[in-house]
Length: 197
Length: 310
Image 1: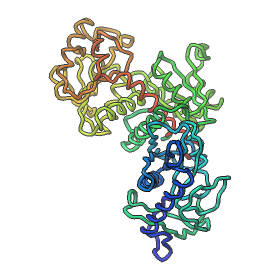
Image 2 (image 1 turned 120 degrees about the horizontal axis):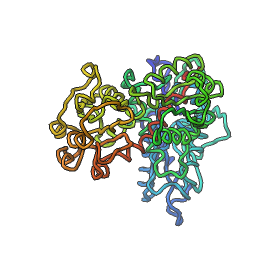
Image 3 (image 1 turned 180 degrees about the vertical axis):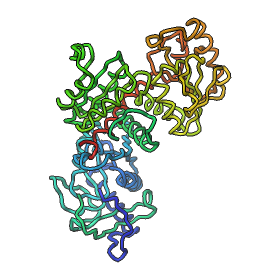
């Protein structure tokens, strides 16, 4: 996930990767790709389930779900999956508060689950999400949708749907802002001068 | 949090963080196939009970196991305590054997504090699961979780704690936690069952149950602790029950939304009638259910993050 640090940054060092309009268009494109890849409406299979990873994956999943429903006519459930309890870095940081988990009512068994997150970086969050999913049921398949892929994977994980690929250095910080959590839509790149853990 | 010994100096934001974690744990475990989280894998939790207990010991054991900690239960009867080992030596032994957390119940007030002092250099954390007539913080936390769930919040709510306050660690823990979280507490008890110094507690005191019931959002009935009573605190069980017991007639005095709590074990027919205990507004089994989630949350806050361990 993107770093949550929002210090009083020097605006000159901050670059806008996606504007509000770009974010909307990117989400719409990803919605079309999910419809195509999951062959939504083409067969008897139940529609996919979108599960956002808090904090910003949750509103992203809701938006993707709304767009997919709009484009395909099929109702696509969107929920949230908190992975805090499954993280491998709990003991390296102060105690983290838990975020909301919201599973669709009829569960995830035998459904295609699309995990949704804002930024794909080391891949460790997704590793934790895969472990968490296993305790909630047995999906038919699991896919991954991210708004930004910034590289630097530490695990053999890749995304199925990527809004924007951004080559970054480890000392840069990618922030996804969403109206639901931050008051506006944007993706920002900032030089921090220190490597993210 | 380094230890959980008392609610008296527990900060409001710490208590709220634990309660929020408990809520999320409850929600995330709801309807799951696998009710087990990997969070405390490789951590060892030892429960050390020098007093009888069913619900608290089982609740801690389940909480630890659902978080994937290894839980070892030590009871005074079957351990070296029976051979005359001191509490201090037993604690240091358990810590040396690899305990990351010791959960202790002891008949002496202050036992958990002493234990935390002896274990200060070891990195082992201590949870007070009841010490004499002093404190039982996880019970107060699970009561607060239940009240938050039923009433939507605690700020400005009025809670009556009724009965044997003198011998009740549950009452002491609840008084401080509820006050910290913004609730008003009224103690209702005969003068003989109120502790000295109660005038310094953040509470009001009443001896008339019927006068208090119409104005409360929750009523917490305490067990009459005959095992700690040596002498006449009230004329007879029947008289106590008539003056301070919660029966059907008194239930009707409560506002529609008010909740009935009891920390258990209940003496049906003494402080609470059987009909009231099984009534829908009684949250007694919910208290037990929430107890597991609250204790999971306590273990999470004590053991999961960095810097909590030496």
